[in-house]
Length: 181
Image (cartoon, rainbow, N blue to C red; front, side):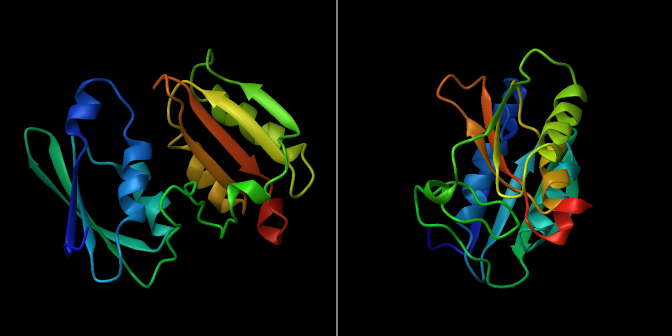
């Protein structure tokens, strides 16, 4: 798109019980310098603020009635964008998926209730060596886990599989001092 404003209305996805995180992240990757993303949601997406702040975005939010929210995300500086079709980046300066090693650990967290998938995933990452990768299956987008991965200096890739019900997350343990935090 060449418009100065990109608009994404995730209200239909949310009302249908879906998880819009992947759609939102795809839209974020299309926002270029001098452009904004206008997001419409059925609630204030507070967890998203931290995720996008680490990707170089500020936000302005307002309730627009009926419990719906409008949030305008603006890049604060030139933000590196992957090429079309590339995996979603983490906020820690990730490299292409093909450069990642095969996962050395696998978790199936689909049958667990929150916050157990978050706790179990973070514990498994602690057992990895820096640079090793963990694969985890989840039944929803890990919106509270992703900021914690960023805070600890880990890289991640994630998205829903073709079934639309299974979220596959790959996490590469950080090698910097942030990983020890």
